[in-house]
Image 1 (cartoon, rainbow, N blue to C red):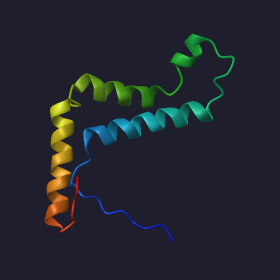
Image 2: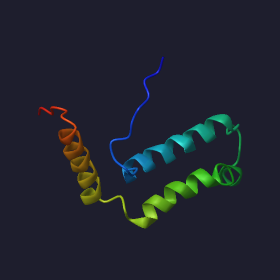
Image 3: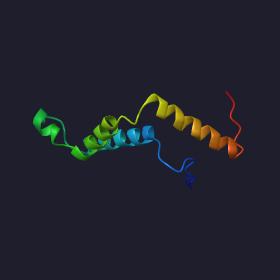
Image 4: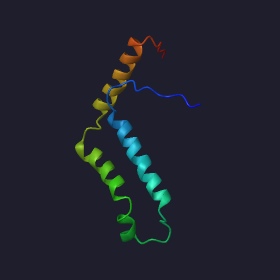
Length: 87
């Protein structure tokens, strides 16, 4: 039986959104027949998934400062829950 994951943060970090958007794009291309298609045809595939990635990148919210802050927030919350973190 698969273990249910409980989110640590009460929000989804931007890097997680970015990774999930890229995974969705890859999955879209994998289920589409892309072999032998012209560039124009490929541009019309998976538009929703590509727009999601573009939106994240254009928003400029995925900065190094934001990524580090999200990781630090996770570490603080794990510490509050009594999870021992060793480096």
